[in-house]
Image 1 (cartoon, rainbow, N blue to C red):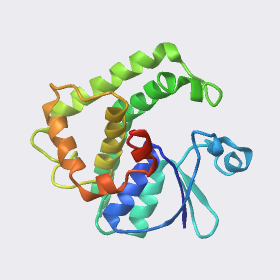
Image 2 (cartoon, helix red, strand yellow):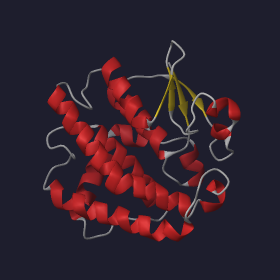
Image 3 (cartoon, helix red, strand yellow):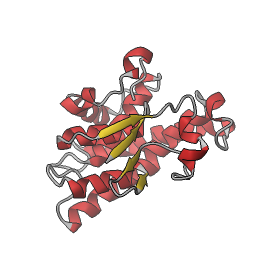
Image 4 (cartoon, rainbow, N blue to C red):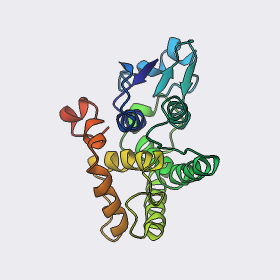
Length: 216
């Protein structure tokens, strides 16, 4: 297998997932800033033009980080990061989707339409007038999740999962570009600190992070 990697949060989620699994894969680093992932030969096999992509040994390309994580979970089932039973898997996917819909998707939209507007203007439809609204939605989602966490150190009580990874890499990225967690969401702060203390958190940072100060 070959992982098409990059200095971005979603590829970092796959790297962190693999580190938690203790699995090492061959990888190829893509120059997203330079638009390598938007070139015709890449888009021909991955119409969304996004990273990460996992190329399987039979030549199949898997895009979308959630699909990649599911595939890796089935190939390397221990330790469990999505679920060992149908119920566990459904619960993990439920929380993954809640986090994406209410927090990470608004966060990335706010970034594309705001700080990264000039880079993405020629690559996708951008709505700069919506940047602040999406950022507000992100913080609203965090407040919602804060009220649900209780004293749990993981999103799904009692087990670390792909949902924790997905949220952590997004919030660590946001913090590094100046979008800090609001002080009143104390449960999120506690959860974030516990996740950041895992060895996979620091180890999953892209080498460009040391140069740019951006956590991806």
